[in-house]
Length: 387
Image: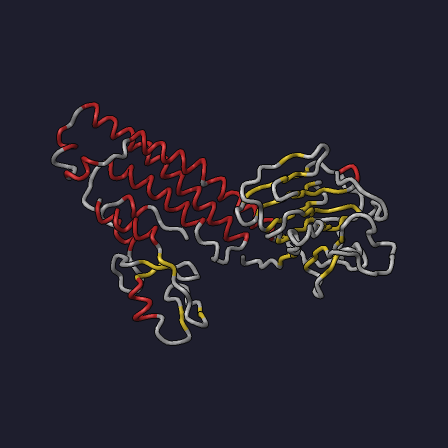
């Protein structure tokens, strides 16, 4: 969701930014629809979402059944602040609004994960955000300097006739505004860039299913081939050449010898797991050390707290709350393997400069059952291009 910034910086048009498209009045109890548009609560509840099918007034998207509306406290706060400062003039008003709108734009981009963002639309929105913020940086800096100048020359009309009494109590100084802007840029923009990166790699999502002929006898696969867990004792399975007999591994049916591919695995509820990609020629009948020299590019969790990138030597990774879903992206020609924490939109680990010469298989190790403490399955998650 992106808003035109020009009206915000104009006192004659500023309120238009806060108008509900149904009643053409400033938002009252603003709510958001699942498609990302904002209206007064009363407008949609009493006038729009009355009879099925329910249709968004802005984008005309149909909903069956009636969609759940989310209270938009961010816009409510912005409307309140807009009303409070509607008559404020001069650099102080514009500078404060610049900071507030930078925060608003960044947050509005991030708090709408339900919006159908494709790679192209995500990149376009990120580009618009960057352009808007670049313009606001200039306005903010100009107004910070103007505030400083007015304070230095001691113009009484700034503090009396031109600014209402309540504005004299504003605790946001020019330095604080500058710091607020810096904080937004440092904390939020990297997240937006990573979200854009995730949208790009999701373009290369592939359908991955587990190959039962490779599964260790101690593993149980779901009928659809998308889940694997470790059982208490080995199953009686024929010893096929492709089957692992030492490590608790299973490979995907799909193999890749060129191009790019991406898949996601749910690891929620597990204390131990390993996943990544492996070359075709490694031994399946002996113990294998998981490292690039052996043909494995992977990450692992052990004992719920030991999170590692399995390079040589292994790299201990920061573990906040533990990933619930992991994304794996491979670029065969460029020799790249990237891992992402999907739920927190964080980069986890990478292998770069790899010279792949064999076919690669996604591989999975759910870890031992550990008396039920690690009984949750690894689940290959389907990926929608509109997620």
